Amino acid sequence: MHKFYSVRTSHKFGNELDLVATYAITKNIGLLAKYATYDADTFSSDTDKFWLQFELKF
Image: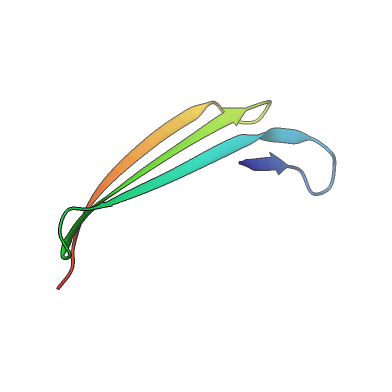
């Protein structure tokens, strides 16, 4: 969990949670999934993002 706030003041911007999962299908093929969610307090807006990555190793 990351907490974002102003360096100059004690103003709190929001919190972010990041998750990562990997799965090896074979020794040369894998999957990677990432998820991030930002919960805005007073800055910007709430955001959710998801990535799915396919990996090949040579």
